[in-house]
Image (cartoon, rainbow, N blue to C red; front, side, top):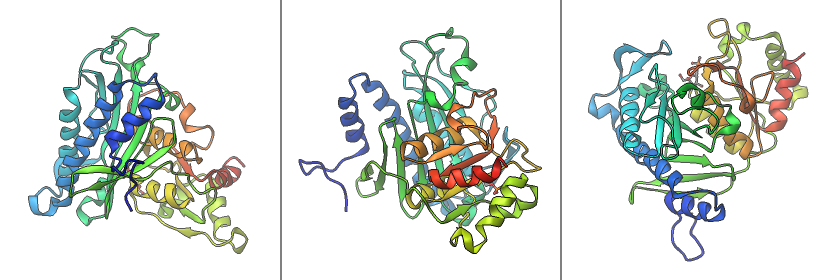
Length: 335
Ligand code: P6P
């Protein structure tokens, strides 16, 4: 059932953004121009993902990115697509990609080039070749007024509470975008017959509880003791019958958690003592969405959105999902 407006028209993402902006006079059309660049890029990426096996674009490029991960051909295609679709939009000053060591400075931030876009172009790369859901994650900041335009890193290294928008696109059985500008979380499904993202779930609220935990239990022996204690508890009758779901693609695991409730966690491990997931363009955008949907996100010690970033590709432990479930994990974590 596609949501239609009172006038019977379908509510596309562009229409939704413009109508949202009417509610908030401070918003300007500038933001919708940025978001339309992201949606254009994700439609192009979706077309490549859908037929990757036919285009000889599966597999790796033979190079390794700043994260030390093998770059998949589709990673590179997605990265270049986003850079191209956003690169000419004058109101974007800086872009930060998971794939690139350094920021892309289109223009030193000023009152015109006001936006900073951070993104993971194709999250879940290891799943690409086996046709498991993958996704694009984005976070949007505005330049800081209190630092010089040339102080690029200060404009980028802002805590998650400063995000003006965040979202993801999951390339799954259907292509779905979820986004927030701080006024709720709204979900759109790509209608391939018209090539538009159409409103499918307005104002999503994450279930307060959920009997699903999502963690790579293969690393259990490496987790902090509190996490091991939580997992032992979750296996008991007293816990009420949890089930484990783990896809290994943050976007897909978070999408399920947002809709069904439960908790996703990526704790510190020996290989990733500071956690594996990146703060600026994975944890922060997902935490913004989670909190806007009534959920919570922590690094085990503090709210993800209040972390002061110190480096571009900084990693963080992540516990995210239904508030009651995140609190339950934290009750063991801090013991
Ligand atoms: P592991 C994908 O590579 C990713 O960055 C996230 O999408 C996902 O949640 C995580 O890594 C999976 O990591 O160590 O369980 O394979």
